[in-house]
Length: 130
Image 1 (cartoon, rainbow, N blue to C red):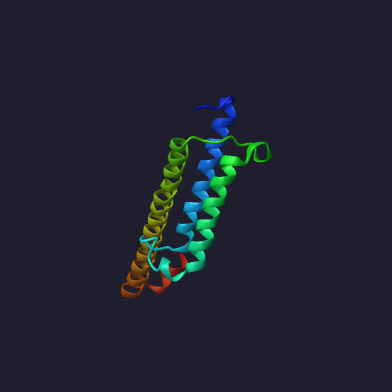
Image 2: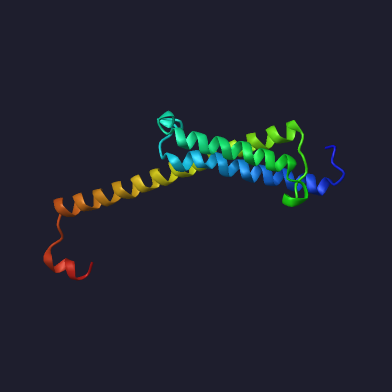
């Protein structure tokens, strides 16, 4: 990097990565479905607000200077931080997929237990011990 303070450059990169992760995670929070862009065109305000946040944050990272304790990043570093930020979409979707699968599994087990109890009820005297 062409920065006189490598530590500041690294902190700026991490800050950019954090900001872009938050921005791209907003796509995850607007939809629980696999296709994050489904019906996104119907919400023009969301697109406008998120686009403005993206541009404003990029500008603040680049020209924030002493006020925001940042230093300008190279185009390559900005793009890498954006790409790493996009990865949050995959991470959160995998987490949601696991949680839904786990929930569905618990629901299935509960339904099977209820079905077995209805089909094969315990004699009344055994109910005291279970």
